[in-house]
Image 1 (cartoon, rainbow, N blue to C red):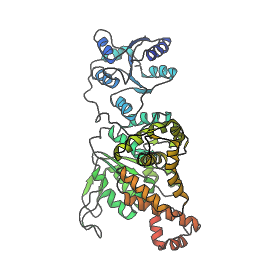
Image 2 (image 1 turned 45 degrees about the vertical axis):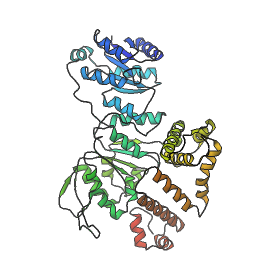
Image 3 (image 1 turned 60 degrees about the vertical axis):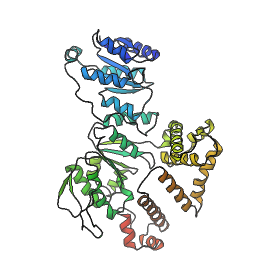
Image 4 (image 1 turned 30 degrees about the horizontal axis):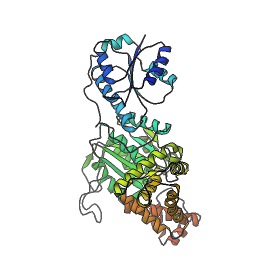
Length: 473
């Protein structure tokens, strides 16, 4: 008979879980605090498996996990919590947890998990228990993430981040624009052994194609006109850390080959250089596009996709996680008020319901920008539905007004600057060109010469800026 301990300050959780485990044939003991369990270990035989909550009076479950793993590294520990976030999930896996369960959980699933976690030969496991010590816990410590969510999709994402943070694997993050893909990349970095190293981000769609090679790999002085001194590229800047490549699907084909070599060999030459540069970088890439479709169209290398897509994480759009909207809105509103030096504000319940019902085509970024407007412009301390209507109105008006794009751009720039973003000039130019080119090609039925003429550009210039794979006529 297997011995299982449950450490949780909630008596109801201990009772319900213990009942299910006893019905499955296990011997179960319960403890209210981590200290109670540690004291019991001094006078009683160790369990074969242990459940622990995270938040408890006194020492929390992650501290208990760390202490257990120092003396009993073979003991399977299942961590439970009603407060699911990247920090606690990653901390559990980093500390050696067998699994992380989000409360409430299915009891049948928990019992099945116990059967998988228990050693095949309990006597052998007990014989080695205590013979080894955990020499170090990887990672830089639990660092709070800006990722927020308590829906099943986000809980699954947090568990995946917790498991992947310790693995030196390339990760491809997919999701619509504005869902927070860079936050996932940062969480993977901050919860990994590379957390002390740099995190370097680059939006490949925001850099003109002719400059992107130099931005990635650097260049030597004199490599091209205007290169007056050596430039260290993003790969070198990220040495020992993580490089986040956003919108990887927009990378020109000529650079995909160079990127593939770096991923395979960990080395490259600067533009115009002869010195072989070696780097140790974990690459996390992101895209809102279907890369398999780009591969089928010949616009993206299949071998590069395989290198980047060792593990894929999908970040759901906000409309698929509407229950997370109130918590996100309250966090964004508080952050915006603090950074603006404005009085603290809160949402009235009808306003939160209105936010939950919104479609959010711009995803989390749209919600965050809305909260900046509310923090700056809403007159009272309580945000009402009327305040939301007023905050939504400028965006809706600018969307339909032919002359509203300048006001929309101005508002976008203010919000991005207030949020501390950089590279606004390159980002704005890239977005403006993409909109103009798509509109002109749609207007001319894909005829490049006519589109270029309407835009006031030469056909070759338009072709170069569009890159491969776009409509050709």
